[in-house]
Image (cartoon, rainbow, N blue to C red; front, side, top):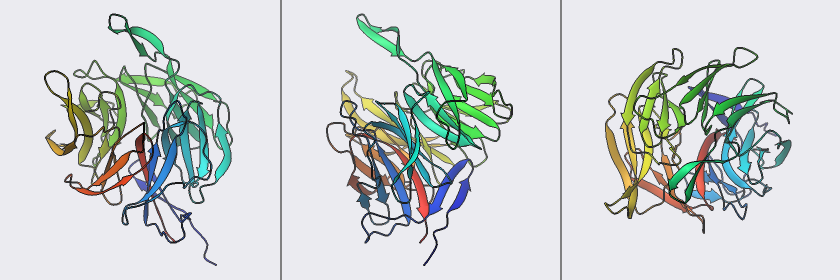
Length: 364
C-alpha cells in the first residue's frame, strides 16, 4: 500500500501544497488542482468550491463534502493539508482536509466581523476584517456612502485557537495580507499598514502611502522576481515598495477593478495582470478587459476583452495559465482559462459568484 506524502513548495512567499488528491469521481486523476471559490448569493448563503483539472478541462463540483451555509470570501491552503474557507453571513472560518474534502474540527467564529482574507506565520493565523459598516458620506444627495473605519486584523494562536490572542487596528477597509520575513503588510484605505511580527506586541511600524493614488483603497499584493512587493490601489494603479526599507520604488497608473482591485502575477513574476470595466461617454457598459503590466517598464497590454462581468483573476503558478470568469449571481458563472498572451484555452461553468482562485499540485 502506497503512503501519501505531503511536500511543501515555496514560491517566494506563497506556500503551495503537494499531495495526493482523492476525487469523488475515481476516473479523474489530477495533476494540478485549481481551487475555484464561488462567493454565492448573499441572501441564499450558497457559497461553494470547485476543483478544476486544467489539463483535461474537467470540474469536480463538490470536492468539499459539507456546505457551511455562507457566502465565501477567500481560501488559503496550508502545509498541514488544510483548505481554509473564509465566509460571511454568518462570519466564520472553517478548515477542510484538502485531500479528502472532509470538514475538520477546526472552526473559528469569534473575533470575526466581515472577515476577508487569511495568512499564516508560525503558529499564528492572521485574518483581515472589515468590521461594521458606517455611513461616511453620500455618493449623491440622498444616496449614503458606507465605509469600514474600524477594520482590524484578528490574530489566532493555531492550531486550536478559537479566540483572538491579539487584535491589530487597521483604520479603514483592511483587505489583502502579505507576510514577508518578520513583517505583516495589510492593504487599507490609508495605504499599506506595516506590523513588526518579531515583537510579541506586533506593533504598527509605519504606513506606506501613495503620492499618486489618493482616492481609492490599497487592496492586494504580489511579489515580483526581484523580491519587490506590488500592491493595487483602486481608482489608481500599482505601487511597488521595498519590503525591507518600505521605500516606494514605482507607481504605475493601470486599469483596475474599482471595487475588488484584484491582481495576479505571471509564472515568471515579471508581469502583473488586472482587469477593468469599460464605459462609453454616457457611462453605458461596453465590456471589460484583462491587462498585463510589465513590472520593469510599466508598459500595459490589453490581453482579452468582451461583454463580461469580470470579478476575479488568478494565475496557476505551475502552468502560467490565467483564470478569470464571467461572474454571475443569479446563475452559475463561466470561468475562462487563458494563456499568458490572452488566448482563450478553455471555459467551464462553475458556481454562483466565482470570485477567487488558489492552486496546488499533488502526486499519487
